[in-house]
Length: 535
Ligand code: ACM
Ligand code: ZN
Image (cartoon, rainbow, N blue to C red; front, side, top):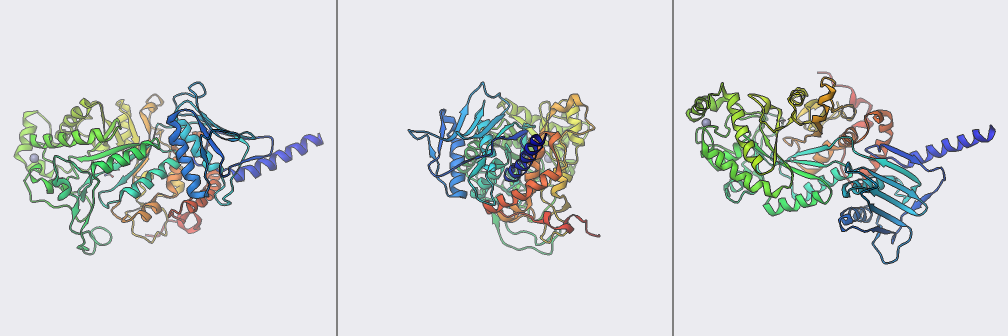
């Protein structure tokens, strides 16, 4: 009896000690610490061993990470191998669901999976078995079995309101990879700047990528800085980013906004609007009445030409066509738009928007791709194969799923990372108030949706609109630590979601942010940050 008790106490204290050392976000489905106390130590020269060429990407990621943050050089596939990191791709040892197992024992580290993607996720967990605060290279003996809960684990970045260079976009993609996220939604066009080179329409970037100034302060602002702001990505740069993401098993979903949020395109080619202009690349925020004309066939020719150039750049099966916040003011006054309504016996301008989206959907579908649109695309009738991104709460997503359409959840109250995360926020933000706890509490499967329709909820995404985010450090501040919370919402088992456990691991994650030298919000440490300000 006494022996058992002592054994139990040892096991408990050992467990506690090891738990303190191993802190993985998102939390793995199963993790057990070995009965035999011990650890495997990574050191310079430790081999990374793998057979299939495809695993070079995972091996390379691990090697670069250890070089950059631990000043350690592992050897890739050396002639003589002994104890090391073994990446084993084996269709039998895992299924297509990107599950993996990670075992650390005397003989080394063994990551097994049925897919390359699973191996990559195993590498991410391996990275996090290292204690970032101690910069220790000891990994306690353990076994992890893990797989993602949702298929769509996304982060969005608006590069129109403020432009971000390729170097930062790549960093952003790395942050996704380190959190086992797998979709990067790249918001490339909007009223304040067109950011993707289209060879057939050079003015989109010559004219549409630069605004003459930007409002100062919170909308409506206190003036204009009269400083040009611009930037765009060449098609070569787009390819480079897409490859960078693919090497990290991340799909880039491009967004080309239509029919609203089109001022930059209209300024470049005024014939695309209802009145013919003149238009301007917007210098303030909000929603603008000038949109693509729905009655002019030349507009569809233009957008189809744009899709012709966009589609081959992005292997993604999804192309996001926007669809949000399209005022009907100009369509109501436009003879061409009104004629279209008559010709197609449409009820009103909402049905005209639906006509617009459905016409574009046919074109995108013919290229073997699926459209994604913001939840306004439900108004006037959903295009037959459209996927809906629910942002004005969850209602749009619930309705779309009931209509058997796939959905990504991105409700404003939880998933808008441009909102403040501290009640004591003193930098300029869009507003709102979304703490890391609130993000952590989000459940993508709505209680109001019948269980039979849950399969239509692909996952969720956080959006980073950049009206008030002018530089990379501010992007980091807005996403960290909320993105760490989101990764757990999307990856981990619902039953294992536990704020107090996450809170402990988040403290370790802060050391990891320090290791990465990223900027992050410390509101979490401020007891007053969750007390809502008096109005
Ligand atoms: C949106 O926030 N307008 C999708
Ligand atoms: Zn029109």
